[in-house]
Image (cartoon, rainbow, N blue to C red; front, side, top):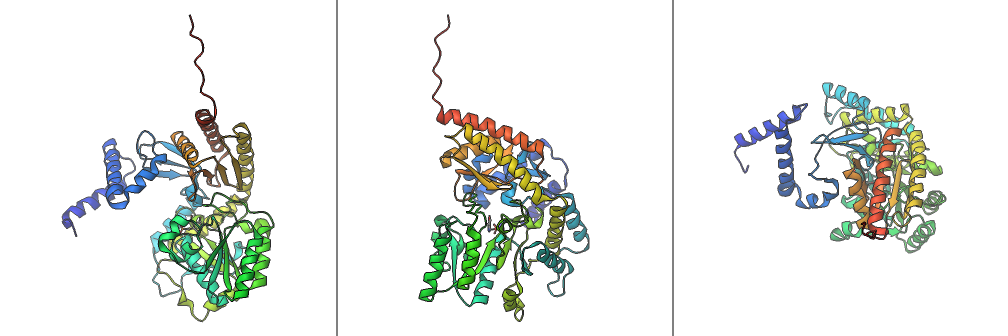
Length: 460
Ligand SMILES: Cc1ncc(COP(=O)(O)O)c(C=O)c1O
């Protein structure tokens, strides 16, 4: 230890007292803000302070509380959440049914013994079977999206006996080493190459490319275990593929003996207007990966689910893939509550309806500001607005934030801003946020694309 235990005890007690408080005094807010910024600079990463400038107004904004479709910073300023935690908050923030499930479970047992059978893991696996398309049946639960991808890749290798993968340019599947092999951004991958050496990236949305790589891999004996794709690319810029893309890739996988792995970590749980995005095209993948919203915005949980034929590889060796915290009871009951709320509140249908409305109004704005707004695209409540440059995208995101609406660029570029609010967003909140979007568009458009106003003749 670097300092005396007595001092650490004082610090931890002070923090636990703050956590327990319903309201903070102004002095406590200021002290906590100062501690947070200094600890980011010294113990987290000073680069993050630099990077997060778009979400700082006249003061450094520190998040503090949330509920339904909004969150508050420590000074009490309220923001409409148009980002939804990159797809985490589909059922809103701290949905009462998810909170109740987790709180009730916590009163009885928090984590599992690791040895006995667990009821809620079992029930959740059955529910995942029920809500996923086609013959998807068996599930493994982990703690994140990347973990789900890791498991899916291992399962594809196991089932096919092959080692190579095809993924898409602009695809994002996480940053652990296996998932990073499929992720497409050079900056994230280069320092760690070769990662999984035989992972080929093809342009997204072009089934001919997938065909040519499967065919040549087949000819040279470097057979492909799996084709990993997001049904709509999230971090790559909200890219929607042509309607025949996934059905054609499905057929190609069958033809060449590769498994189709659908990464629904961001698109799943109703986000695009269907429970799972692949349902837009009636495609059933061999393995489907979930994360983010699966835990109801309260607990972290990811999963990969597959059909019996593929899963059979794991029957005799169930511990070939395992993790300590995956499938813990708190996370499983949160996911069960998330499924319940998603169906009870008809959130996929709501995402489709609200998404269509929002898309129509954003497209109308695009027509009014054609130089500023290059494109509006998406499905359901997964919408991307593209600007001519990263700098303008950043300026727009900052303008929204200053006016109480949180959005963000995608991981691959700041020039596409994503609109991914909770699927529970109300019409009033949508109208308010669209008002802000219009105001900021006007301001940024005037700064960049309108000639400066000449001063009129001096009045006598
Ligand atoms: C499509 C997709 N797959 C995988 C991941 C990785 O998930 P996690 O950050 O939970 O590891 C993400 C995260 O943004 C994602 O969007």
